[in-house]
Amino acid sequence: MRNMYCCKLLAIQTTSCTPNYSCVSEMAMFLRVNTRQINNARLFKFHVDAPLSWLSMTSTALIALAFSAAIGITFLVLGCALFENWWPMFVLFFYFLSPVPTVISRRLSGSLDSSSSALVELCIFFTVGIVISAIGLPIVLARTLVIQWGACGLVLAGNVVVFLTILGYFFVFGNDDLDYSSW
Image 1 (cartoon, rainbow, N blue to C red):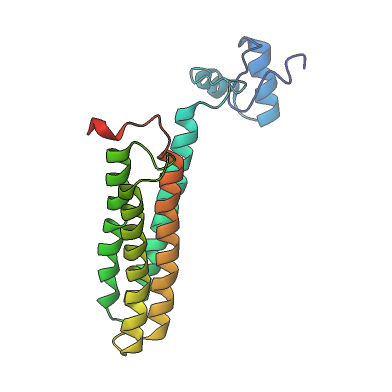
Image 2 (image 1 turned 90 degrees about the vertical axis):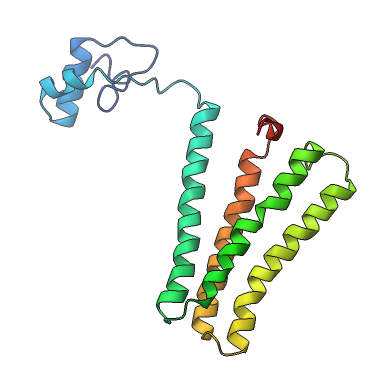
């Protein structure tokens, strides 16, 4: 039991201990599994005391952003499929167009955090116009009775989730470490 805090689940070890037989056997008693399986699992060693690297934080953020984008697209597809009307799928064009002005602005002006310029303001204006158009399209389709109001609600929910995901992408990956001029 002397290495109780040293041994973690399935041979995850801290930097303060070295793997030894007593550590592995204590872990086997704790998990009630075969010692041979744990000895084989010792090949996979992770240091849990190491600080989270930038790569692991961005990969976690990227997974969360992908999950939320999938939820938003699911709302859009549900709005179309449940009401058997695929006109709201035209909102996808707005999803693809919305980050384009921001990317152009960041590439040509350096960043959005600097002092305001005409290019930055124009790109923000175009982005807001695209987002408002994406929100307005299902409302106009519902007012003209092309789609039902339930479908409009699901598409608007999908719009909110997808546009917040795009905004989150620019918050997470919009720092100065990434160079937009490289592509």
